[in-house]
Length: 422
Image 1 (cartoon, one colour):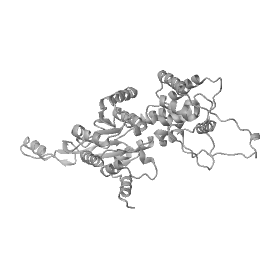
Image 2 (cartoon, rainbow, N blue to C red):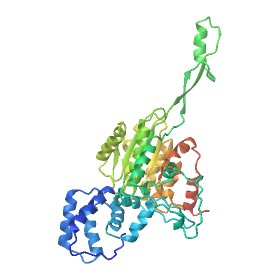
Image 3 (cartoon, rainbow, N blue to C red):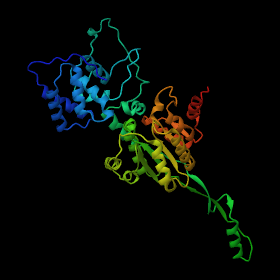
């Protein structure tokens, strides 16, 4: 939340012009601010008036913020724009490459980098040249950068919610190159194969009858191989909005990739209701695909009813898409306020219908995460693998999860915490 420092108002100030520029900064930071909201904000400030910074903050907040996830971005941009020198200096240092000492760097909060880039767009962020005369003791400092991570490696481990606009665009390009290969399934059905491992007795006898019932060669056969379906259930509620957009980019790349082995890729979004967006993700252009998916899913950034949505999927879609050993990818934070018994029953049914159920939860990025929420506690016993889904590295680790179905370490630890055991 913003700090309400004293706000000096000059007699000849141009407040309306400043509000217009503030709205432009909000638009650069990602808020949907149009000319109508700017006019409403100017009229609201004129009508309400203000004597304290707190009043001014909440008047603009009422005009420009329409969703809960926009509050953090608005607070950061407000502190930067309306002349908070301490915060501006902090953001400049955050965006500028610096030599860090032994003191631990302050952890970046969500939306800080986007707010700073919106304000400092086009500003020179280079460090000034330091001459030997500027150094008090004349000590030369040599920095060994041999073990520092490259920009791409740092981006792979960076949280999606903490990425700037430019970093998110680069992350999307990296995600478009990700692959999600899957090993084939061995079917019980067989096919004729010259160098098979099993003798085909019926075909051998038919061959012998053509030659006077004399067996001159053995016909061989081998088991068929087939590829499973991938079914993705993506939570698009308000608490998952930053991650859902990025995961949908990943699902689009998987849907349109060649040679990964999946028979079909089905994608569903859910918040307060279930929406099938499979046909939209088949479009080659990712922007057009996500725009169509967003138009189809009317509950984007709304509430969460995981139990009801899973129940609708189990009732209407499970028999259509979960046959032949499908793999289910569930992307949600598990924060649900509905009946946990209903959620547990639907999760159990989903687990029994799928060959493997993988849960991607961005909350798992926090060290010491424990399944204390009722929804998470109800869902956890019915998944095969429980993994984080907050960065590019976590999405890359999905390939390992698909090749090692016995990867139960994290789930076992959390189940132990759930039961209150060591």
